[in-house]
Length: 562
Image 1 (cartoon, rainbow, N blue to C red):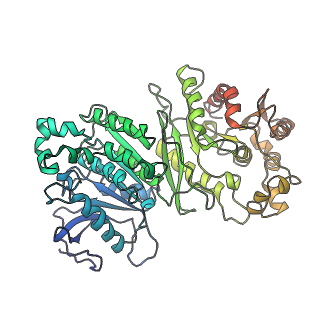
Image 2 (image 1 turned 180 degrees about the horizontal axis):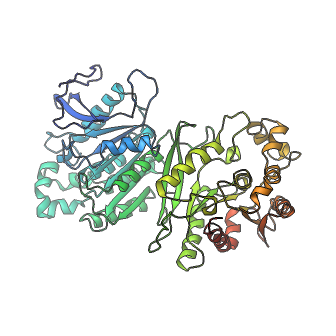
Image 3 (image 1 turned 45 degrees about the vertical axis):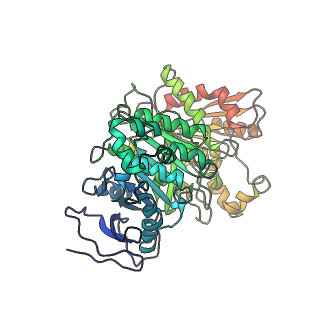
């Protein structure tokens, strides 16, 4: 069957794929540069209808070989399943079928203008013909082999067009290699016209420093390579150049080899999709209209950034995951887990320090193993559903995010294997969750908690008094931690244990002591530590208590089931 597609955009009649993917659609755009139609494939989001009004971000995928659509390294079925599983938000994937023979550059001969036609013809045609979000913050590019080279090159050469890029084992040859290595001489002649300068100025290592001002703090790059792949050294060299120019680059050296086709490890592809989604302009924290809470550009080993799509918020929300180091092996029922809620006086990148303590403690045998999940956002709503329901943070985290995290990574599963850790306003959230959700959490660690009374809230936090509690004293009284702890004390007593930590010079010390006294009156198992000489900031406090915190948590989430 031959299909005809709408034409104002330049999309034209396209011959059918002899082995079409069930979900992907074959299209073509009319290239004025080439004077002919150029094919490509589009994978629309599940349930996509041209007649609707909502728009979606786009990921452009570059294969290692031009026209290689019958065995893509990023299978359409995997993308659709990740969207249906809510690991990803709905998005388009465009499979580029032209330009790999020129490494997605404009060949010196002028016969293969791969870079120009993609940026100036393919992307505009896609944006005119499909309901995309047509801006760089909602456009990512990724590829494998030559496509990996092309993806990074496009991102650093056109920072106004792409917000992120990922490469899988891209051949990032230095200019000297193109000219001197016999295996590359034919490509050197065909692509760069045997011109050393042309080869040099087309390399990402040359273009990234040239455009670093436009790239820094705006674009994100990811390099994935197998630790025995033949391009490993070249990928390491490019990583070092990018980092020397203070550009955000995520590095992943995996055990499995990376080759084109079905052999691209499925988990590596999924993490690449999550990486692309996590930097899209539609991504946000759980805070209403709040900014996306980005992780730092350099992450320690075993800490990875992921996303979950929230149907309540209609956008992806982020989390960072730490898994215990090899050679530790997960129990048959998975790792126990601790969920972290951040606070105002604690930088969102503090998980670097937190997981650093945890990593050392595990390697030294100072604590029992558990996974650590950093939940982004929620502070603006005090980690609860606001009075008018406009910010359903608690519902999003407990009903959508945590269940999806645990299903994907085989974590938690019962209160005895799950704890919550909170700092500042996150301490308010942790105390509430422990009190109100004994069927979910079996332990809570609370640092420098912010626990205002009804009398003090309007003056201490007037914005929250209006936006979260809607100036409603009854709503506050029904939802604040002390009331919930009293209400559920009998059910909590055999199940949960608390640890409260506060700096001796912290403004939160009064709140911490008040919480301690209340827990003790209710006969709930409680540890309390008051750290001398420490004020209110989370980092200062954790440097003093971090080891004891992770030891407590290790015991708390590795208890026998009641």
